[in-house]
Length: 421
Image (cartoon, rainbow, N blue to C red; front, side, top):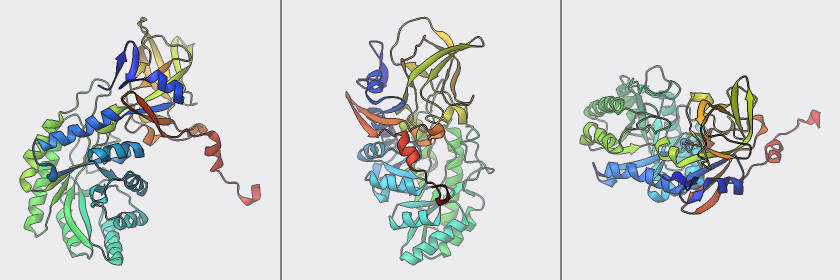
């Protein structure tokens, strides 16, 4: 574990987090280079136990944390990228990730984004609809290119995750009903500029049980067999991402067991496997540091008010998710019960309710744990609050990886219409 107490000081690798907070200010996202590398290598090593490395590609899901420093570090480890927007594609390319290792997913790609992806010669576009397929064909013909695509199928498998992040049930907006897929592959084969060489599936995020994957991948394997019998050359299966992490008491699946599920359901097909992990690479590699602004007693309760807010970390208000709060300096004092809240004028701006925590005072620093995924990437300027600064830790070194934003910069983007000048 790269984040732990050393002599009562909470450290990331060899850096006391209180020192980072004092140096760069708060709110502050801190990422552990060592944890990111370790988490990526866990996927690579698990897959290497079941198939040679040439037979799979781990495409990190950029939406989890798209900081270019994070992408460059993972690229140096051998990662590709799973992107869901033109902006994420730009980030991945800027980080030096080879287009041959980039997969473009997403339910609402614009024509401009598809043009961008096709011009970049990325590995594969995961198609979500017949109309999207037609647009890709039109662009491909215009550019005189052959575009590799996979059709994303919806297997109607319940991943048993939060309703806002499940993506593999028939009522979800993602993918093509798996029973209708053969008909769409037939249409794809007739379209110019299209190489329908893959099948893609992604059933959700934060999965804690491998059985939904086994069911989904078994259905995909049967589809691949059917497609091949119909004359389609299917060479790739995109397995999606979604392995869960521990936020509170969860027990994530063992990656070696996950690799065995892939081996047992898909590898006999001789396909190239693509994985799209995001949360399980970045989640526990990052924390959000915050300073206690005030401790308030009201209505028989104690409120620990932080300078971090829901605009910095929106997962608790959006998903009712749990992020443990650890003091950056452990006191050993008897714990109290408190609500840990932010300064935004909404009751939803609450991180934890009724939490047992050591007594804290104004000026103390705390870390909101497991915030490396879907933390900074989902943040906003709500209440005209600057985005949290971001740093990366490597051993005993700390470096800025996202500069400090100012209120002047935020407001400077506003433009008065002529009649108000």
